[in-house]
Image (cartoon, rainbow, N blue to C red; front, side, top):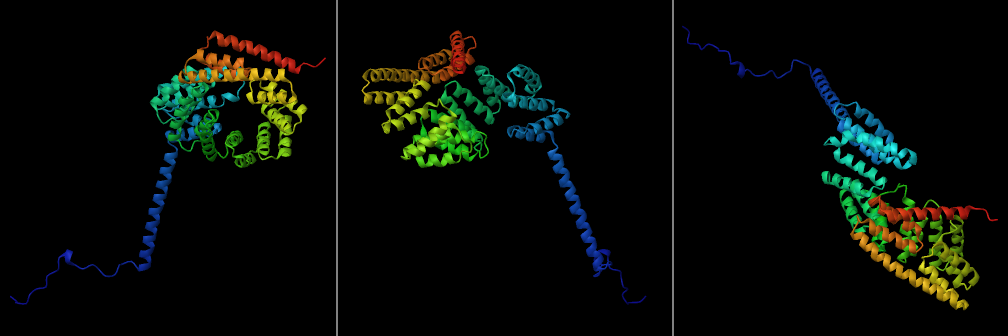
Length: 449
């Protein structure tokens, strides 16, 4: 037997790997590139498929339709409602969208079509009100419809339930604020609007209403701030010109004449109010001729504009043109019999002309108007603290009627009837006012013999 050791084969796991690939380097690079391409292509189709799946989801389409509703793109809303109606389980969502379009377009419809629309609305919302996902929004739409119909109690109850179920419904808080404002409860309106701004700080509407309420309460600094915030958020708003006019008036009340002129320069549409406010700015700057020119334009647009007539009479009085002053101030008092400033100017004129009896008469009437104004302010405060009391709203309307302010009286009588449709005194007052207004229209339009 030989002593020479025999060579043994190394285990497979100890066999070294070949240092060279059997594939040439170019073929190896091409294979890697092809593999990477397949991976990227697979990822692309996966992403595209996932994106298509997401945007095709019914809940996504419903949210997009609701955004289109807020942007008044009603054709898009109808299109999505039609698609959702064919999707199993989404019939309530489709009916809700259809009802929402009915409500949002209701104001542009003729009065004869209103009752049919409400019947259609009730039918569409039956399903949506029974579905837990659509009930809060259904209550919102129903509350909006009731608000449009001036059904104050019902609208308030429905909208309150809506925000209880979903505290993030910004529009519901805005509608509640509108109802409170219409009922003379400014504090409740402001509280609801503050809630709306916290939910959606980019929404211009709450700031718009806060500006209007602050303006009417003569909180001028707050009004200017709120109007400014609303305008920053609504560059394309359809009521932008009206907001600018209200802002300019606030700036004038705060003696910010240059700011008011700048604001008025941004108002695109000419109107009697725009010309009047610009005339006031020129008058404050002692540019009397420019003020007169704008007053002429204002009165051409609106001959019975009491404030423009008052300013015209004031300019004439300062120029000691007593005939022109008496004519303009008398017309101003005829246009607004409760205007204390116009009556005071007329009293001053009569004093200068030595017409003592006429001056004393104006003093008595002016004092009576001031006392009536104090009484109205007291009643308004009571009405604000009791937003569901129709009798207080009737009382405010009656007091405005004594001041010969029928437009304000009608507003408050309507509030009383919205709270209590059977309120007899308010209904009778409205009927009597309607007859008087009809007679005045006939008298103004009848030819002179």
